[in-house]
Figure (cartoon, rainbow over the protein chains, first blue to last red):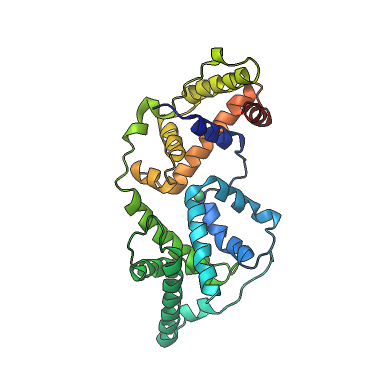
Length: 79
Length: 208
Ligand SMILES: [Zn+2]
């Protein structure tokens, strides 16, 4: 089946947004705990950590895991 | 915060020579992770039944295995939770997606683009979109491998990378790299035709 218009737009978004310094999933995972601490402390994400943010915008798996991680940690913090 | 080191004593306790100290740290960590996962994975992937204790047992093995790679850039418990969350979600994701069929998106058709009929549309913006799509179609055919097409289609269908990796006997990081390389090739192909990323974005935004 051919791609829908929405899928074509998503594909073009994937192409135009690609950056050479993107983290892969392992790279993202290696820094996600540190990234989570900024979120938990409601601190501004420093420039050097923005690659993590960009990976999460591209990767459904890592984004899903990050959301679950935050849900668990925030629940424990508020106990 | 960039240079902050988190100096809790978990590593020292978990690697302690005294078995009693180790066991008590392990029990405490286990209890922490079960509490966290009970909240984070509850209702995940359609409320699938899961046993946090089993997941935590697997996660603890991984955590102890990797403990020497912990760099104190976060609290130890935060780091341990990232591992446990990944173990848990991977398991739920596999169960959730095991019945999905990928048949419809494999083969030569996996990234087929049908060009819209521009005769019915005003010239100008619609035409520009047509040019972008025509070039995209050519680039997909000339620059991408069958694996790359399949992986990208899977993502566009909303499948997690991990599921695509399972179905292609690969791993998640390799699939991410495969897709990343495909995105770079397509972007470079556009650039070689004189279409910069900003131009393409502007054309498509203007066509809406
Ligand atoms: Zn990822």
